[in-house]
Figure 1 (cartoon, helix red, strand yellow):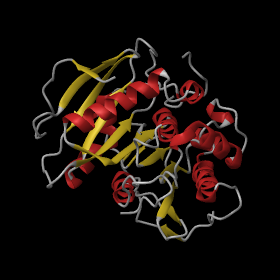
Figure 2 (cartoon, rainbow, N blue to C red):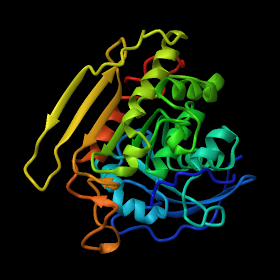
Figure 3 (cartoon, one colour):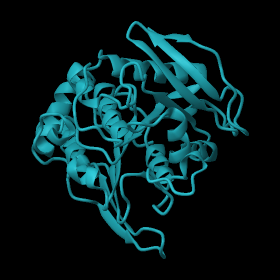
Figure 4 (tube, one colour):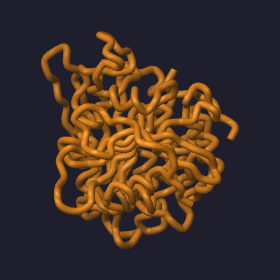
Length: 335
């Protein structure tokens, strides 16, 4: 099971040697190790073959439980997206010495806060990649699947000064009870998120996707991810939970491609300036899998990868692409 429904027990120093990158990858692609006083994390880097002028956007992809950086890179197809848009893609990998099932401890990390072991290590990997491979600090995004989605949400809450926007696949609201947290609804989750953000608090755009046939996503209430982040936006918009930020979709559409492709629904939410701050994708017929993924390890059938889902990774990046880190926390992230 990629999503583990229990909490776990709970500056920049780059070390390690480069291993050969995948065929066709640009120089610098490969596996590295990040070390700090908090421990070590291996991570995979994919440098896009094409290079646009200026600093590169950076996408940090967090794998699900039981996966490695390599399997996540294969299943997620984010390298393809990075190549298409000239983005650096970074895959931190949970240290098996800390969790033999390679699941991120999002519940413990939410409780530990910004200086907790896993959040600090992932942030360290991110900052190292931005500095070493010419990343654009205004365009750093984090996305995850299942346990990785839980951790991506935690990173966006604890480091809103580092990550411009967040993407969650089969995730859950921050500090939510069925994700081993404590919240009981979207508003309570939002209050916990704003408290955890502290002085770094700002509105973080969110892309959410989950499968209609995914019992894990249903159990963790992936459908409440966007409402919880809209509640965060409402609180931060004017300092009060008063409905100043609309929680109704500005637009919705249903797509019904020919079988075996899955039908899906997309809802977009905007702030008072018209900036899209949330997208919600419900993919009918998709179970607990990377959407639009490719089979892992050359297998003909991979239950954790669904090639019949819509191209969610590209849609996620197109949503990310609309946003860059604002100069001031209360300003819009729309470019």
